[in-house]
Image 1 (spheres, rainbow, N blue to C red):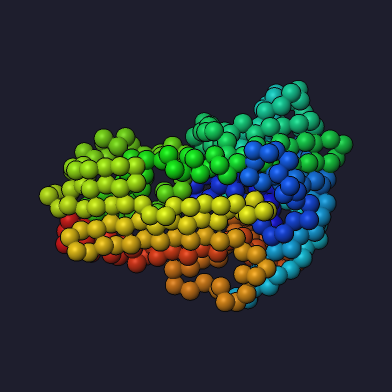
Image 2 (cartoon, one colour):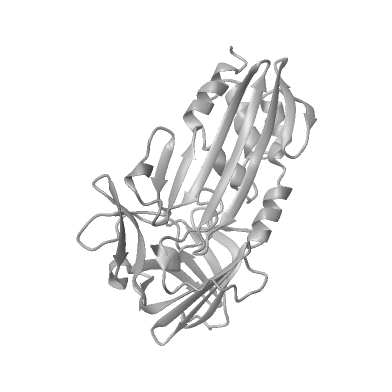
Length: 335
């Protein structure tokens, strides 16, 4: 649905959001180093009082929708998925608040002298209006917006090789992934963030230093690599390893991913698995309606079709998070 507006989401979002089949998408790879290149055009208006950009794409889209518990593949006219984006503009800097919470915005730069009209290029920085600070990382895609005479064009070049290089280089044993494991295995499990978010989060982990975490939970590191670790808590030895972490990008820019991890104590091994698939026409059947451990969802808001409430479906997700946590609790230091 909102793939013409969709941003790069690093944590939960899984980096890129784009839904359905868009006839305006250009997947020819104009940038030879890009995994995929997508362009979308349409019209826009500016509500300066509310600081909103109102976007209407040129083309209809086809996508999977959920209504009254059933799934159907439908085509929507442009006016049925018109969108509004809140913005902040200061000199040569434009922030577009595309996120669900409205608190995080992508930072763009241009030489437009305080006007929306012109060309804006994504900096690779996300601004948090609550913290009043920006988090910058090497961008995994190049996004360029052009606004002129009531018309817009958005072009995104997605670099899958950069995503995979960063993922392969990540030290999973010095991240929020092991932080969560240490916490659960000490019996501290009031709330557990989904493991796939920690595994695929390529941004700097917003956690205390690794040394502080080890000290807090009385962890002794016995042996460690980037993807495996043997450690002890209160003289109980555990092993941990990441398995089969892969990621791909579909022709319309959506991410598909798979990962898993194992944690063992003595003869007991707890296994976690996660799979994410883009929902295409072939998957848009009632056979993929959620069962235990499954989820069908969208990175975009829920209301799209005029006068009828629909939930657009971008991705199908399967994991065994709850069963995995129960298994970890059975081998924590209190048992």
